[in-house]
Length: 422
Image (cartoon, rainbow, N blue to C red):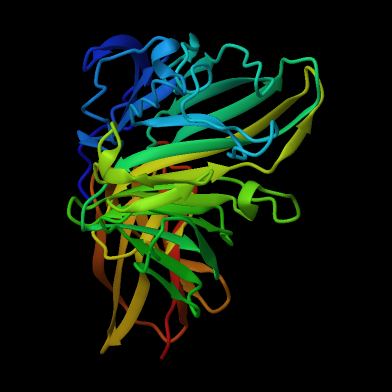
């Protein structure tokens, strides 16, 4: 729980060259983002303390293609990173988006302006050209916060056409994969959309209502209806996780009936619009990566109507084999656990901090009164929080809470709590 950066580091925005692209860099001493407006308003990289989280296709690094080079005849240029698309995807009617490729929304040059640059926060706005096919213009406001690993992405889609349309906002984020990559989310069901062979590397714990997808070199796409608005990609080799937060609207209609979809890039084949596609023959290559795809409900937009949809990226460092839960303060690998040993109570747990601050352990009596608070010290998303400590046992002790405070002493929230039994 060593703090390797100061939460006082101010938020900053600057123009920067990133691997040959003209990029905008946002940073706060914890997270760093590189955004390239001219290639579809992509966020090409997200880093936490020098650890990169997004896949970047080496075949297209530093390159920008013309509209003619990014159309259906020339094929899609998968740069990597994170972008926003319209959904549903399909090829049977004008109410479906047949991309990628798409020379405007996916590959066109977005405008970019700095909205805010203060010590506490910094934000930029990206906006696409109007797209006649969908009738839409996309914008994304990307914001960072002081002392936090949280990156807010505020999507807005506006009907800039002359007809009514019905679309969903579709955020697609690519992350490099290896045999130690696993994706976790809360759900009781999922189904496979693409992949000519069944993808058998998903497990479902019905009691915990927790799904786990292990990366294997086999192309597949899965759709799921999560019960909670988070998905976490854990890289146990590096000891990092990327948590993504999004709202859920259970009563509304989604493309594919799924607020969350997962693409596994690998060898094999899948069939789309009647064509069998061999991944080994893709000009973009068959690199190991996974996509987390977050969708909004379908919305009907009359001309000049707007719809907004907000998501968050929250990278962290964690020593764990799973992500079992997520809250505003932390990703939980091993929940807080207590064990009575004589006159002491041993407290253990594994967490990935999502904000920087000071940890404390509060001992709470049966009446609900906080009897004792032990300060554990500074904590940050840059270092795993692997907790093991002891507190004196008392007969009236009921439970303990692991809490986080900011540098001003204000309570940010509870990471986890546990009951103490006699």
